Image 1 (cartoon, rainbow, N blue to C red):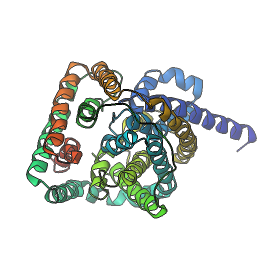
Image 2 (image 1 turned 90 degrees about the horizontal axis):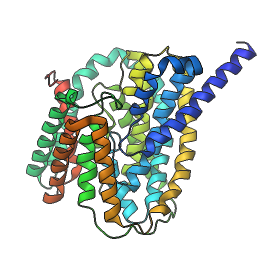
Image 3 (image 1 turned 30 degrees about the vertical axis):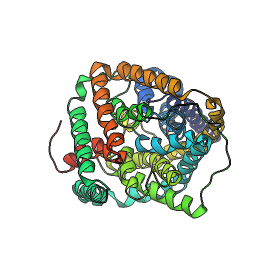
Image 4 (image 1 turned 60 degrees about the vertical axis):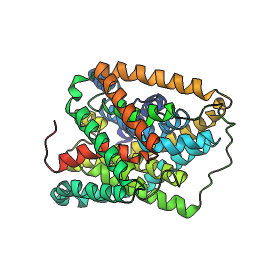
Length: 413
């Protein structure tokens, strides 16, 4: 390769990293917005952007934005208490730490989890790329059984199995209903996964804000990350493996990983470990999705669907871009975590109302009247665990039941 071609390659990689980090930061800071939203906009400008950036820089921008989003999205979920499809359960312990004055620590823990995932997920993704395609038929068959076993254990071990089963079943029915009639919602900006926004925001966001304690936000002070090194290592490994698993297997998502991790790490007991593990799962999921695209030609998220429509660079080039974007995103997240002080003394009731109004408006904008209807139903279901004093993890039935039905070959769309 000549020096000129190498220089052009480096410029395209750098352009993809910088633009992707910027776009991923923007999407990550807006509650309820996913990198898929920006991907849809960029694809609509595909011809122009290909001419301006070239295929490597454009593909790199999409992947870098996805990686960056997995870091930065912890900020609104921590301080405002609003999840997206990737943070769901993780928002609960993170926002709880904010209410104790430890919001910056929660964000830094999430960033640390994502950073640790890069170290573990990249070599694991390479192994999956070469070793797992031959075993894929067996994986496809066993997903539903695995999830059924995990759910059964979670329900049986609950303090109130009856309520746990009831909440899981109702949330599952709502999830199936949402997916089956998703075509009734608007998808002009958010892509095919748009209906997950009102569904998960209602279950894990608004329902929590409506029952949150009132008063003013306590002073936010960072006293360091209060976790033992062995806990950091254990949570990083568990989260990364969960993210790799759900990212490779069809029909699963990071939200599913959140539910699986909750059966191992109690999000209401060991909040810091759970935040770190779910953040690791989120970032690992993005990297394994790239391996699945190249190895199996399967698209695990909207960004991978977009990449499949472009002239694809090599997987090594995109991996390099992803690692560089992760390094930059970590620094961006650490800097932005210092915004925790902005929330000191703010009236919690007014803040919650403002966030609820914003998210309701955004849901209506992105998904239309049907999305608003789903949001109302999700809020009602999400309030039940608080009323009967049962863990919110069983609301994950909204994601897990459709996946199990899909695995068992039961058509619901």
